[in-house]
Amino acid sequence: MSDCPIENQEVNKKQLSELFFEREKGILIVISGPSCAGKGSVCKIICQKNPDLRLSISETTRKPRNYEKQGRDYFYVSKESFETRIKQGQYLEYATVYENYYGTPKDYVENLLESGYDVILEIDIQGAAKVRSNYKEGIYIFIVPPSMQELRRRIEERGTESKEQMEMRLNCAYEEMRNADDYSYIVINDDLEDAARRVQSIITAEKCRTERLKNKIEDILGR
Image 1: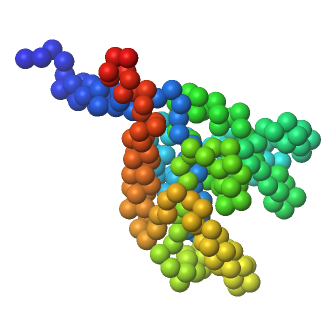
Image 2 (image 1 turned 30 degrees about the vertical axis):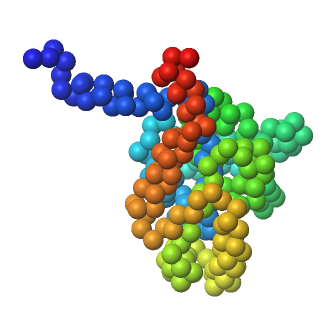
Image 3 (image 1 turned 180 degrees about the vertical axis):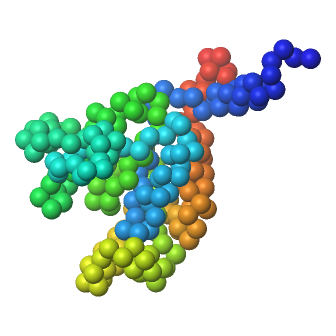
């Protein structure tokens, strides 16, 4: 009988099976979609199930709300600091929303990638276009509802918009979905858990791409 507990043997087998996917740098994953398509919920599910996956944290110049924490919800910075970092090219993308800046800090994301973590950016289509210009090797996924009727139902169910605001969101969603072909993958979120599984499958398949594993083949061949 082996001196090793059975559960340890299972862990070791899992570790051995995952050695092939070890890499020096993580993968950048960009997820976009219209409001209420469910992209935030999908990101939450896959992050909970993947310890090597990180959801990027944005910087903002707006004041934190009572329930928000520095470094968990956002990195809160002054307007002067943000504008200085813009001039220095320190953001993968940024935008102004209601007179406040929001941006994805380049150094934060690149440090995570260099440490071997896969990083998710949950950003709009304009931000994704800016990121794509510098990270063409990233994974670009667009989350959509199964129909505009279902999207309307979800917005109504949320109950935070007036009739005018709801129509504005629906019009915006329509325009956003016209740009879905800019993305490598489209996932229809008709069931949240199933959509999360499909996104996870995309990430797993991307890890098996030849160009990501060329060095592993060389290691196996002993070159």
